[in-house]
Length: 196
Image (cartoon, rainbow, N blue to C red; front, side, top):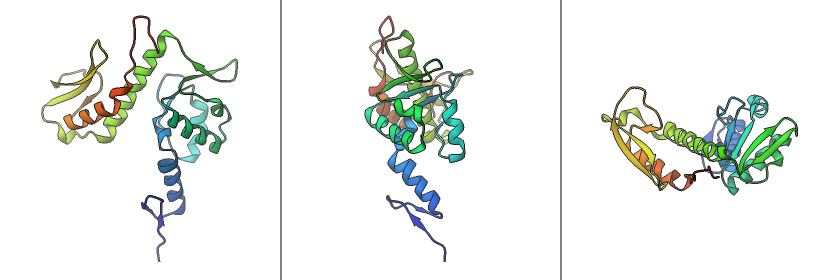
């Protein structure tokens, strides 16, 4: 008789390990996937639950972006559980950079580039949202994109297909609308000098 393992939310798995990993990564620390993990080439590293890759993942991270207190709490739990000592020093939300001289992550703030980093991170998270929910089958001849105005309000605009399309675009208006609702309060307001 085949054994079935049931997670705390009722989802079923064929192995105990798969069930335990799901409970840990998806139920206990789901917000860790929202953390911005960035390497020395300024490329985002995708959070991976495969244990054999965590050591590489840990060593490759040069920049970490924490967005809120609950995300920080779950990130700290993950760092302690995995034994990632240098990550354990991250104790507040914001942007953290690895310092080769200090040999630790340093909290970074009040810099012209800070706002640009937050905006880049926001677009990255919108792209992840699009990847999960958007579907090419919903394309009806018009793309939808989220744009901002001078007052830092976000809105959705539609436009026909064109070559060399830049930015985050959606096939479905409903998915674009859901993304706007999800991220509308996270737009960083930037003044002329760059504020974060």
